Image (cartoon, rainbow, N blue to C red; front, side, top):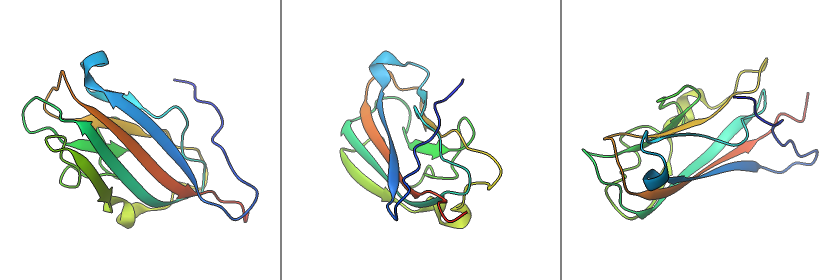
Length: 130
């Protein structure tokens, strides 16, 4: 999938990626962010907000830089089986995006859901210092 160039502010501001995930329109339970993380960015936060509970077997919302990955949001951090928001910290061990290439971000809901809605927001600081 060809993605548009990630946004990079020239001032000292954080930026974010947001993806609306609706299992009723995507039975695979997998989404890709419309933009990627720019090379050298540092992830400073992630939030998963479940507005409609996901059905399926023990649904969890994850996010990573590979399909099905958990490097940004781990499976234990965001249950898709409960309403509400989860502030996720799984990214802390690998917070910096590779300096040489932009990274796609993939969202996954485990348990083969056919219903459920969540918004995933990933906040990052772009590498504007060179």
